[in-house]
Length: 398
Ligand SMILES: Nc1ncnc2c1ncn2[C@@H]1O[C@H](COP(=O)(O)OP(=O)(O)O)[C@@H](O)[C@H]1O
Ligand SMILES: [Mg+2]
Image 1 (cartoon, rainbow, N blue to C red):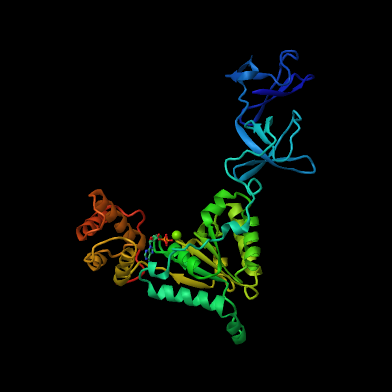
Image 2: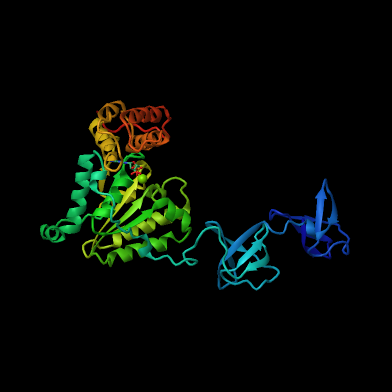
């Protein structure tokens, strides 16, 4: 314990424990101790020990702000805590300081912010950095097997919204702002969005929910706002803002969701409500594996009122998904694709695609440059034996 104050009159010594709690002992000889001394106490007895015994540095914090009343706010991961500065160090905003377990500043480590994770002011984040850059040999709709109704619906909604503004206005239709892609993991939600990014000719902002939440701790709201503003002035005249795994930010506000994620959803809703999609054709597409965890407020009219459901593939879908693999892979002509499609009830598109990876390993391991029928059959066996990472319930029948 460290002596923080001595009341000479009553002989009471006030102390602070290493974890920030306080204590006092009375009846101490007034000259025995002075402020700042460190004592060790056990079983009602105490003795003075070297000041080095005090655990000085437990945490490092970056000073986020100093309020007018002098309160110093330090950043610890994604939280802010008031720091105390009894020694009166010349602390400035953005300095990196060492603090003990009771958030008392021990020394200044640097005038610069030193953080585990990047922070938007450390590295200037521009909304343009989220723009998807189309590639020469990028994905096409032919890379998406099966799910004909899903693809047709997505194309129709997006194309009409982006290309047929005048007609929609004439008709007096309310513009579509948000489309939600839902379905179990590995059913191609991200894959289809990537294809749309490549093919739509719109400015496509590719935002990963988990990344934006963890990487830009505390500043996500600012970034979201900038992206919406940027999209509204898009050069292409049409924009798509894609939020992958939106459940990471849009989790139901009921229950004990973290305060910051609650704020983020509120901010997101304000942005959705605030942007005028008729000025500059803009749509927001969001994908989630857990539609049931989403805040119902996101689904209100004028927000994500269109949902496209990616169920598990039917047998024909599975066959077509397997066939997309043959587009870029060197393989024999007689692969048992249909046979495998029949045997893979309840498999996701991602799991089906992993047969190709496995088949390539087998063929290459054997020194061959072409996948043979046996390789494919053997690869299927291997993937089938592997436990599935997450069991999901079938949504479609075959
Ligand atoms: N319809 C499809 N046709 C071909 N390959 C697909 C299809 N859907 C998914 N895949 C493959 O499975 C992988 C995982 O799919 P992904 O889009 O990430 O699933 P989700 O986002 O729904 O969890 C993709 O990278 C792609 O290789
Ligand atoms: Mg995905």
